[in-house]
Image (cartoon, rainbow, N blue to C red; front, top):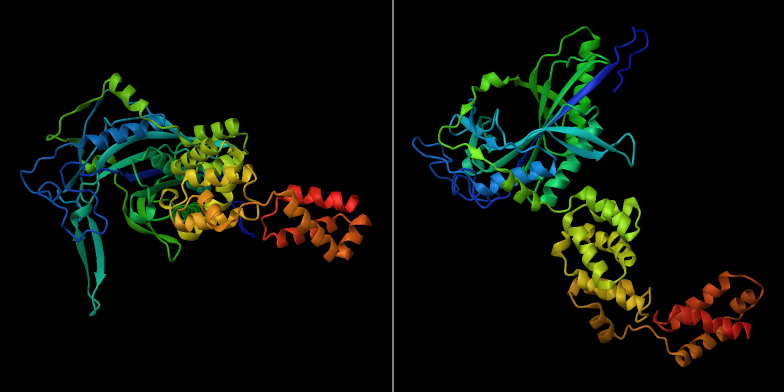
Length: 495
């Protein structure tokens, strides 16, 4: 970002923006990170999914959740990270009401992974990719939830729900490689897509399963040393992240241009006011007094175990996009649409395989199936139209059993009832009429009833043929074979 200056003032300094993102993603597991309490806290009555461990009671001991550890390492592998053989958990000490024990079990100097990278669409160069480094992916426990309340008298107080405390939480720490707010948004979308492909997190921001803190600083362009870093929190959507970073860039630039100094601090985004506000001074690592967690053993991850976990990786979005474009001869835009989610990509491939017509499968999904999902708010695996249904419809079209005009009607009934398209066609008599004798009569009637269109056709007006085809299709209730109708019309008109 290049700073601007106002008329009548001296030129402003040209600043380089430096952004690093810290993303917390809840891991999908049945139980919490260090106890057997259910991690499915959404909708549960407050403080019902708790035990001495997640309540932080003296003498309670944590037990490691293996599924969460494996999910974290798999995520790190998908983000091209190195997996050290030796890692451990640490106690991160700080005082906050939602931290039950007065410390958080996290990882400090020996995390599960390090030194990876993520590629994402470059907003400044459509069709090009940008790469940003991943410092580490580590694992910790989530905190309790605070609800701030104001009663009828105006008094304010906070309520605490411990149900969320102890839910497995991955932290994906990015290198300070991003330079614009739009890059941050693109980075987050790519990261969320990978987490969902892996199935390790729902990554829903509105449910708190995917949370982002942004570290933002400015430095004069060409300067190697970083400027003072401000951490921005409380952003609950991608749009909020972009707006908060944009605001913070302008705020810091204005302070620096005025000769001021940026204070290293944590600021919160206030969405309805579109500003960031001071929350607290920014802690350094030594402020947390990290030390090894004495109640958990170190973790050894041998190369054989890394290889086993790597073998569990699915085909990731970028690789799938390229394969779709190459294998099915589709445009990059269509491939991108079909690979937005792993479930949608699998839906397409199953439909293409069952129908034998990948091009038609792609067209129906990107045009009609996505419209249905948008109208209903359903996910692809929640609708009655399965790949087998859509493949059946495509085959009916390819064999000429139904016409292009009839197909949407059949599709809608299949979506609403779950009946197979061929059953709908048979039951309702929607099969395409390809009987030459029946169509010859309909063609003759159309010619006799539309002398002006016939005269126009013979005078060289091409649109007249379309009018006459429409007349025949109307007479056959849209079931006439269009190709045969055209052929019979030409025979009678040109004969």
